[in-house]
Each structure stands twice: as structure tokens, then as C-alpha cells.
Length: 137
Image 1 (cartoon, helix red, strand yellow):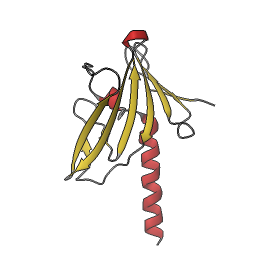
Image 2 (cartoon, rainbow, N blue to C red; image 1 turned 45 degrees about the horizontal axis):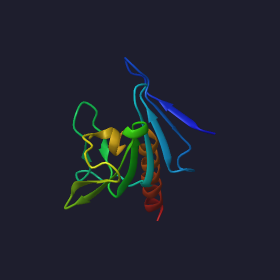
Image 3 (cartoon, helix red, strand yellow; image 1 turned 45 degrees about the vertical axis):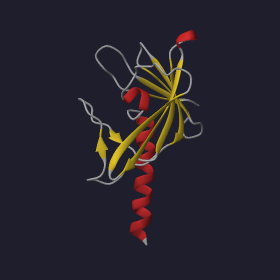
Image 4 (cartoon, helix red, strand yellow; image 1 turned 180 degrees about the horizontal axis):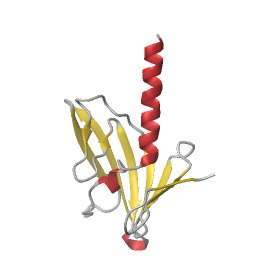
């Protein structure tokens, strides 16, 4: 059964539609646009002070060892880009690979998918389990 998570905003209601982690696909829609994510590597949150955050009014945690393929648009305008984030010397290094359209101008959290609540909860759960296992030894 698909899980739908929604955050209410003034103009529209963003939704995440997914069976993650059973499948690696997440559909995100905000009522005007839709993004399809295929999670290749979920990544993890590093401990402060190394953990970095996105800029802007919403500060999203930036995961390490993260890779996602993002598709948006319709018909001839459909575009797919692969994004990855790896920390190098305690700083996040963002990499994007264009699979079919090198002229895309889209940037930001929606293409990297770092705003997805589904992935945030999965990473936090793994982190909590690792801390509990380490503490019980």
C-alpha cells in the first residue's frame, strides 16, 4: 500500500507518494509540479559540527554518501539528472550528471531530494538504531 505524506502550505499541499524502502521510487508533487526520484544510495547524516544544512528559509540536513536520480517535465521536455552528495574534507561536495539534457537550469532542494520526509525518517531511524547498538555494547 502506498504511503502518502503531506505538509500543508498556504497555496498547495506537497505530497510524497511512495512505498519506500520496499521500492526505491518516490513521487513528490506540490500541486503544480511533480518530481520522480529513484534513490540509488540513501546516505546518512553526519554528526555535528560536520553536518551541513541547505540555505534558505528551510534548513534541510545535507546527507553524506547520497545519490538520487531525479526526473521532471513531460513529453519532449522530460529531463533526468543524477545527483550525488559526498563530504570531502568535512564539506559537502555536490555532483550532477546529466543523462539526456545538458542545458537544464534547474537547481535546488527539489532536484536533490534532500527535502523528502521519507528519506529523512529512514536516515534518522538508522542513526537511532546505530546509537542504541553502540550504547548497548
